[in-house]
Structures are given as C-alpha cells and as structure tokens.
Image (cartoon, rainbow, N blue to C red; front, top):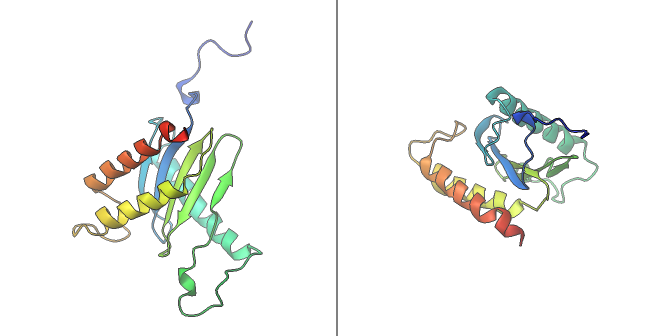
Length: 166
C-alpha cells in the first residue's frame, strides 16, 4: 500500500520549476502589481497583500540591523542606496527581490530547480519604466493597470521559462 492518498487535493499540486509568482511593491510597501505565472491560484488577494507587506517590513528591518553598511560615505544621495533582503531561501521555494534606486521592490517566488532571476527582475523594472511610468493615465503608487506592460511581462517570463535553463 502507498503512503500517499489516491486523491490529492488541488491545493497540493506539484509544480514545475521556475517563476511561480511576480510581485511589485511601491516605495511604501503596498502591492501594486501581482502575476500568478503558473496559474495555481493558491493565494487569495488578502494572502498576496499580507505576503508582500510582510516581506517589505522584514526587508526594511533587515536593512537596519545588517552588520554590513553601505559602501558610500553618506552624502545627499545616500537614500538611493538599494537595501534590504535580496534572496530568501526556504525548503520549497526561493524568493528573490530587486530593490530599485527609488525604493520600489520587484520580487518573484521561484520553485525548484532554482535559477537566478536578477536579470529578469531588472528587465521587468525596465518594462515598468517604459510602459507604466510613461503612461499619462497612470498615477504613481497606484495599482498597475496597463495592458502593454502585462503583455511584455508575460513575454519576458516566457523567454525566461524552462527553455532558459538549458
């Protein structure tokens, strides 16, 4: 007899590796964009907001208690130094974050096999600058509602997908 039940709840679906979810936080830590890349739908809207705001808070605390200080010697542009948690490893996932010079956070949840996503996160930041910030109807720090941005992010994620592991 098997140790595993014959019917597995849809909540415990085995996922393939790669980027599972993408989140964008504004400089205040509010979730302004999220994309469920693999379509699991396992997190509710409240869970996504809770995850992103918790990560923002923990990252801010980590930057303050870090024994490694910024290499710049202060000055008027010291606020532009990216700080906080870059990578968080767990048993079943990896969370990788790109901190922008303006304080925004772009982060992904990655499933095994893990791959470095910094270039992808920088590319998504570039897409944000090109399609969202240049959109005259977008208000800063508000949720992102831009079809061209969404389309280009999905293209970037598709190019980054499992074929990029080769």
